[in-house]
Amino acid sequence: MISSVAGKFGVPMRSGYSATKFALHGFFEALRAEEERNGVHVTMVCPGYIQTDISFSALRGDGRKHAKMDSELAHGMPADECARQILQGIGRKKKEIVVAGVREKSLVYVKRFFPTLLARMIAGADKTRCQDAGMFDFVRSRCAGKSFQDFFLCMWGYSSAGRAHRSQR
Image (cartoon, rainbow, N blue to C red; front, side):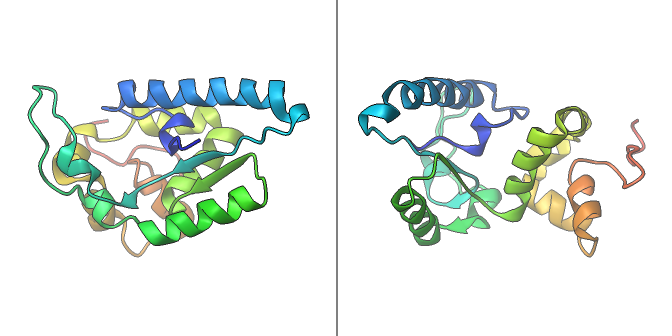
């Protein structure tokens, strides 16, 4: 079943999308529990940003087409690499595959082991600036050259000391 990393944690401006992905996880995890003994194997695939044209046909709040490539998708994982990882995981009968770049995959693990930290990071994100500039461009310009930990925290507007480093705070 193709879901999304948005089914692992919710982010601003994607509540409806995340809700559908969370529902898929619940349904197919229950199906797996019920039918695995009968030889039915369910693999949940959770892709992050993948280089596709999906943003061209995405609809805006007013119903108009978005009609442009989002920078997150443009800089995402190539679709052929995504397909390779999915086929490999299904072949190994994995229960879940997170097919994503380091950034999205890291957030899945932070959610699992430090859910309160992730909630604070998401709540502290500079949503307007991220939405206007595109998250990838914002993160790249703001966090380039930092260690992995500092890059990860920086992309949500935090320093390694755990304090917000934006003047609005």
